[in-house]
Image (cartoon, rainbow, N blue to C red; front, side, top):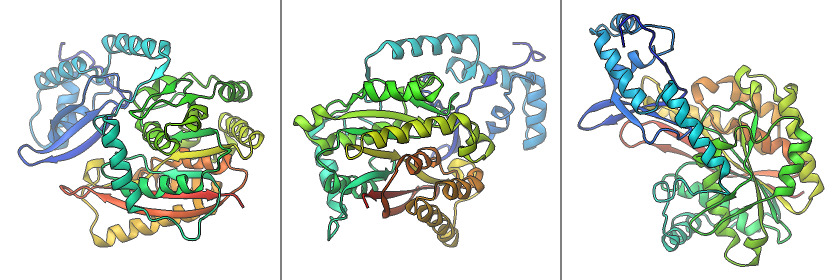
Amino acid sequence: MPALERVPRLRSVETIFVQDRARGRLLVLRDTERIASGSVVLPAELAAVVARLDGVRTAAQVAAEATRATGHPVDAALVQQLVAELDEASMLDTPRFRALRRSVIRAFTSAAVRPAAHAGGAYHDDPAKLVRYIEDECFARAPAASPPRGRMVGLCSPHMDLWRAAVGYGHAYRALRDGLDERVDTFILLGTSHAPMRRAFAVCAKRFDTPLGGLEPDGEAIAQLQADSGFDLREDEYLHRGEHSLEFQAVFLRHVLGQGPRAAAARIVPILCGLGEALVARRDPAHVPEVETFVAALRALVERRAGRVLVVAGADLAHVGPRFGDARALDGRGRELLGARDRESIDLAVGRDAPGFFRQVAADLDTRRVCGLGPLYTLLRALPQGRGEALHYDQCVDPEEGSIVSHASLGYYAD
């Protein structure tokens, strides 16, 4: 590639910073679409180069601007080498990547099953080990409520890996097990898409596989949502392929349902909730037609199946610290302030104030980075009834560099 030729654009990949004992601070590029076969790890000082791969600048311009920004010499040859490596890793928007993406989407679209993409990494892939972990490390650390809270109609659970959020999952799904009405056979699963979405919502009409067995989609419910929504709910269906926010809920739900006829009768409606223009513009979703039309259709579905539906949101809260681009980790006082801000969000969610929850979270979305805004807002709008209760709150702190992901478990119960 000549130095005066425009370099390809970096795709919308996740960029995080990690601290390695041997190599120092590193920049990690992760493909949230999971088209690329793996992550790319670079020295952190190359962030100034990566940030300028916009499809407009030439290699020479990127080199000159990165040199000025860092105070260290960067030449065009280094930029060209990095571009070649990133293209090989499918991190750039090039013809090579676009062909690979089309192939991956075709394969997923034609498949009947959404595989358990994170089994063996974020949780055990061995069924016996997985059951023991859920019972001993999750449920056993979440005492049952006394007196019982009543019949559950909605749930908010973490969507972090099971190792770090075991107690949060335990509070959420033990409460679900204790409060699950035997009539419930429809489970609406709402999740965050960590990859960019073209539409406000994306439904997956495939069987979700887990090490404990599968969960079948509710074809009738999905068809009705499609008919009532006015846009293609499956346009972004492929984003479900590697998304963990719903996969983790499917694992716990499958465990709670057990191995008998109840699991066989259960049906799921898996939905990724991006909120589209509302999230981009920090605009009240009630004034965005695509969001409002879908939410009305979802609420109508819940009302038609009253007593048979439970709505689950997989939703984490804050993402702060060096891993997410902040200059430093929060100190003790900073963690207290974060906790207070998170609890304001929780109070609004427990109080079922959907507009207030959206405004409060959207106000500092660029700094607190609450990634569960979409699914939790949608849950609050979808439930026609239910008193909320905070079950658990935690801040998961990285032991190496202090970055924090916070999460809450919330239950909603019939009045």
